[in-house]
Length: 86
Image (cartoon, rainbow, N blue to C red; front, side):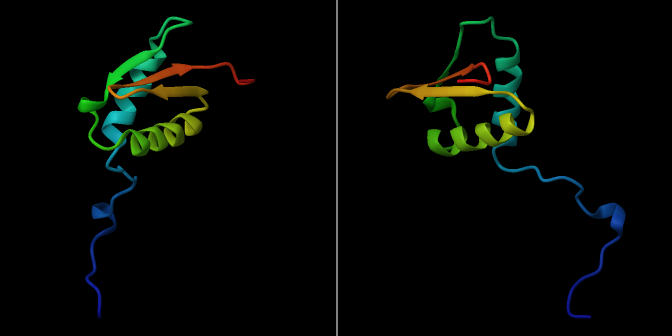
């Protein structure tokens, strides 16, 4: 055989992307927000660029059927829940 064989029990069942930790934490924090409030996340604490984190968060939120909005400035990424119509 050209390729190595492994037991099926050793095959990973899910995809843990490199942004899984931060997106899981952000979604958890967002779920605890009071209406009309936003998370204020220091860009210096993000493990990647704000663009990559924003994209990963958007994909994770869509899968969880959570509607989010984001904004940013030179120092912070802001994230909040929105109504589905926005």
